[in-house]
Length: 504
Ligand code: MCA
Ligand code: AMP
Image 1 (cartoon, rainbow, N blue to C red):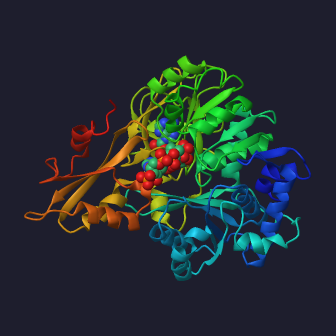
Image 2: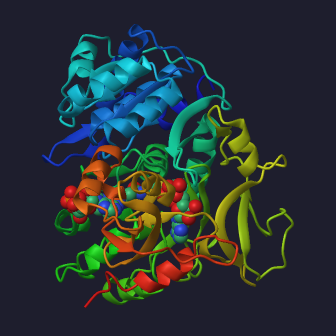
């Protein structure tokens, strides 16, 4: 094939008048119209001087146009780099500079604040808004609606997704065409997606779950998507009778269950509910089955690996587990040295397969720390494999908080808190939250004789970090608990503050 990613996901639909997206205004977009838009974008990208291997960063609202930029990148061999729309200009600045993006597409609303950031990084900035308008769309409007696909190999890079780290510095995970394709193909078969499916798509498309899992599967199978700008439980309940499947983070499921109008009848045409990105409580699994008769299928993945495990489609979907390693994915549980430990015991999960990324962009040392020479990737998740082969994740070796499916690395917040006047040091912990699963709480040790100004700290936070990363509470104490080695005991703090957001 000339360009495996473009040919497999997109070119197969060329000339087809079948529906690809159902949009919130009631209209539908066909595969062919979508591909013609993508071809115009591809011409424009090339006209702006981008070549295969260059990076195109986007921080834009969820729209068919945003997906068309992804398709245009595949067709031109340009590396697609989507960014969370919640990131502040300070955060975006790092991603543009680190990736060396040549072109940056943003929403007109944020364009002024982002302009200095683009200038500093050397990226050309153009706008593309959630409604499809903007300088990029205007420029592309006059371009031809067919584009000669640029040949690529399956080992060529297709996308960068940035993932934060325990040091607080984000790393660009380099994903090849084959990383994306091999996984999407396996998942399409494993979860039995066909062109008869209609997927409720309410996830963001700047992360693995909404883009490389949900969207790629629909493209491979020819399934339709009911494409929402974001998650709204009321809309989901309204549209569910005309859908067959849904993918979501656990918050989607708890929010649906909070509604009395979410009933078995509403879910009557659904064949599959999939959950991932964060642990689904066994209790949510049971409540969902009692309400709808459906057993949620939970799976486990990472930005660096796409999906690793899944509960079975036909067999028992076991609550509290993430199922079996997917076909082609090897999974082992190891001690710190990388030696495999006996079945049933808890250790670090490592995975190997065609899904595993190529490494972190321009960070060979970080890559070497997490990707073994033998190809196994050290996930940082703690888990075990039971006698039946089901994988259970029991915790995280890495200091990570997952809030509503978004990853928050405490170090990033601690770096902001530690600089605040009156703060000697800080520790950020994740505590249970009824809506988001977990949420960050900042514990500040005051400098003797001084008092931190919480409002000023939160104002500083607003400039530095995306809203979803902000601690929901800051607590001031005299000193942080430490063990005999002098290390801050986050487990003691987690225990002390675990009831802060308890329900009822
Ligand atoms: C929004 N807010 C959040 C979150 N989302 N705060 C903490 N955690 C969040 N996840 C902020 C908003 O800015 C707002 O701030 C306030 O919380 C309430 O917003 P609300 O309207 O309730 O939120 P929402 O817009 O309804 O969003 C909640 C959501 C969304 C639907 C759960 O966060 C979401 O779509 N999450 C999915 C993330 C995802 O796709 N993860 C996959 C990553 P204010 O106080 O200003 O009002 S891929 C991955 O993890 C791997 C590979 C995998 O396995 O899939
Ligand atoms: P990300 O860095 O956004 O790719 O997040 C990946 C992390 O999300 C994994 O390393 C896990 O800690 C977590 N994760 C994903 N799916 C699940 C799941 N089904 N259960 C528990 N944790 C999960």
